[in-house]
Image 1 (cartoon, rainbow, N blue to C red):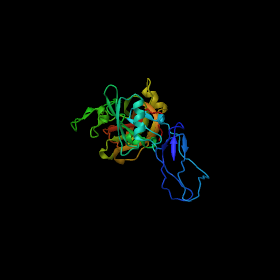
Image 2 (cartoon, helix red, strand yellow; image 1 turned 120 degrees about the horizontal axis):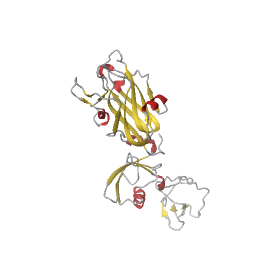
Image 3 (cartoon, rainbow, N blue to C red; image 1 turned 180 degrees about the vertical axis):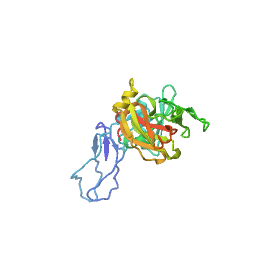
Image 4 (cartoon, rainbow, N blue to C red; image 1 turned 60 degrees about the vertical axis):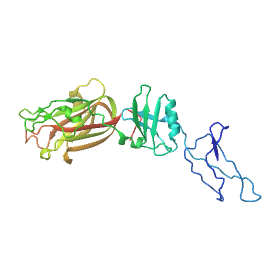
Length: 305
């Protein structure tokens, strides 16, 4: 069996020259590409037999390597169907798109989800991209909030009791053991808010938070995703139009860790508005305190979970 893209030059895609199966045969092929398919009948097991074919069915899909997408934020390459994509075909295509040099780390001759592509551009900069499909792309998302500008309503700054710094930048410094604590003075004050400026708008899919757990306190909070434009905190909080997570009635302790999956709400500013906790107001010193904030998403608009 042979295939050709132009009807002139053919290559063998299945060799059944030693076939001994009578009747219907099914050939499962991988990485066979072509517009024209032809069968060369070489011989027949019957002495006076002749070539005769009742039916031929071909199943496959339109192969369009141009359809891949690149998520530069999470260093991902989305490919909708990798079942027929060879390493050589993909490497040849990437090279033709203007990349000066590249290498693909794959387990065999085909591209699989999880394979890595190392691309060196014209300036000698090397970047590693991970190949994946849309369904499992979230596994490779990186924390968009890490080291980004932190916005907050107040901060204690330094704890006299523990001798540690409690600045707002602790929530995304890459160290989950450091924490932000709101200014208390003589008493805690609610609501307080804290969040990050992602730098531009993203489609947000996951948010992870780790609150203070002292005395098994449970926090009530709301999370907002605000657009890439001039913002008015007070009006946005009151309108609820940008509210993406509502835990204003939260009573679950869960060791202070809260994981939320959402459906790609767009936003540049991710703000947690902390309404109170289970110790307050009986304990007036139970101030808002957050250890860690992680935000996962992408600017790739076509991605959907």
